[in-house]
Length: 228
Image (cartoon, rainbow, N blue to C red; front, side):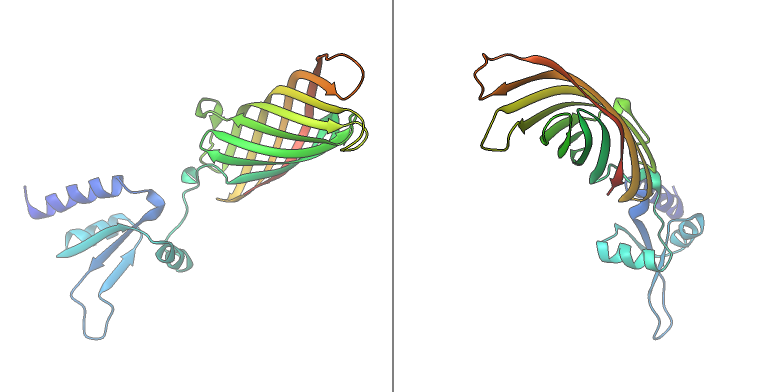
């Protein structure tokens, strides 16, 4: 096999192993006096031809500084299909028993999020948490610009009927399903729209009544916010 064919095969293997948005090719030519010996370019057929005709070349993953410089010069462009999951989501909701609420959801793993929020309405002010599973199997476009996820969660919550140190303490636990859509303008900024339905049980401590668990439900008719 000729030298140029070997170079082409090596180039194909190396580029296929690198993230598309982090590939930079430097072609070192014999420079004239007082010139820059490195020619930088996004990977294109023209760059491949330059590589094949070059005696020395280097392919490496960009450092954060190099990536910033390449973007500023217009040599590197994001591929929205490779953005991955957001960092976190901030959202507000309308529903029952919380007529209004505010929540934050943080991606701690690719398919797992944790969250905390507060709301008020039919119950006294409620503090609630969530552990949510957003599997790839029910997530469409979730590494890209338009993200649609069907998630499944366990949502514990606590409230106090007459203030933190007075009255009864209520504990509510629900299992919920939610539908979340995100339209991203950049990798870490987008608008969110969603809805959620949950069922579970609630009980109160501190009163004279015997321990009893009653069925309950949770509905967030609409949730809107921002993804980062």
